[in-house]
Length: 352
Image (tube, rainbow, N blue to C red; front, side, top):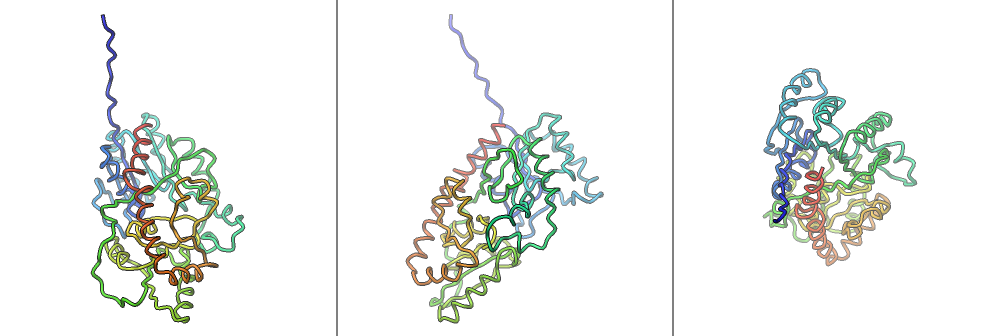
């Protein structure tokens, strides 16, 4: 007589990704998860104005307005019973003050949250750092540290999974996992854009979503200084463009400068690196020491004090521009592709 052990195949959880879109991140996460066989949908209340993407469910709702809140109630109740895992970004769920999370937990749903930056970054803590420049010094927006601390405690109590980044997580007390961006490398790959420009000039691109917070003035000053010294360079500012237009422009430049104040790289740096462009960005070395894969980061680490000399070094060594560009594409593939970062996210969400 033989004992047979029955193996019960676990049903794949239905994953919802929402509800505030930032730089197309939700779309990238969804596509990577689906590519890997997960059941994942995007549910978006608020789009990013520069990323017009075909979300699975789009409800143009202003969640913090009374009328928007009332509209969201029946939609949310329906969605709650359609999915098993709820993945929210920027610390915001369906309802104002994240009131729906109590219902989700009551119904034993799994909840994950990804913090993206100023939703959790604490100005008071950033300004304590011994650094002459920082994004918080330049920022003129209201920064309520008490409210952000309260938000952190809320999610630490109710989220089954927290994703964040050391650069912005001064207020978090509970351990979190590193939230990696994911990029579609079939879309973001080197190509000939067919643009016409002076072949004897080096073309530099910068795409400031906010000039003060990106350190744009420091870039303008450094480029002007180099031009006065006789360097044949042009700077183009990519502002108010769609993602398709940004991709077309980036593909035709030689160097990309992202931000000089934040301390970590974001979506633009990834997009530029995936296109094989050497990318200049401020990277806080303390963060690199906490993230193993970042030790091979090919970004040209620069800040307002060193940008002039860093750009000059690149311009004086054209071979270096090409070498860094090649390494940049390889880095994104090994760190932020669906096959790497997507697999990690899928395992986390399906394992909750």
